[in-house]
Figure 1 (cartoon, helix red, strand yellow):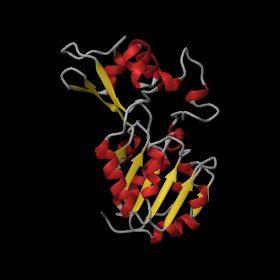
Figure 2 (cartoon, rainbow, N blue to C red):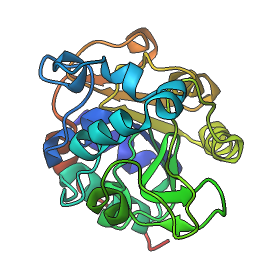
Figure 3 (cartoon, rainbow, N blue to C red):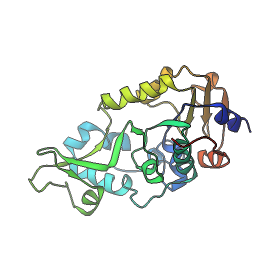
Length: 240
């Protein structure tokens, strides 16, 4: 298998993943036929999950957020587990993810750069106190802190910028990588998709069900589910 050969000869792999990495864990993506963008609500999901909507119609935001954005019982799939194995073997230096579900950490990955934040972190906008996602799930209306302040999920909403430190770390790892595996993403969401241009290494591998704007630059393109592809890999290498 060509991907196995690339993995075997690589020493500094970076994995860049999107929603398609988590669909095999039962978490729907946004843009596929059965994704969130094709379900019907009073407002489009991209409107509800925006900075302005969060402040303008907070109760409606949290009704949608509780219903669709808190898959707390989801478990890592074969892709998450294989990536953690590659990191433990010293082959993978970083996971850069657009997902907010925390499944990479559940699988055992340590160096996970979450471009869009995480549902597992929530903070009071008044005093800064942090809360777990269960507090959001089990509350009604607008979740409030013990101080009375509003709690905001630590996720990047539409109209908000990405965390500068997370961006800087992602760019650092991309620049040093000899192989970049991009999986489960349409590469159409910016600025996250624009990070790919910082990769100057030898192999660009794209694993996605559909074509992407970067296909012309790829060393290898695989149109299969991410977990199925990565589960076939044999991991070799010393311990990190």
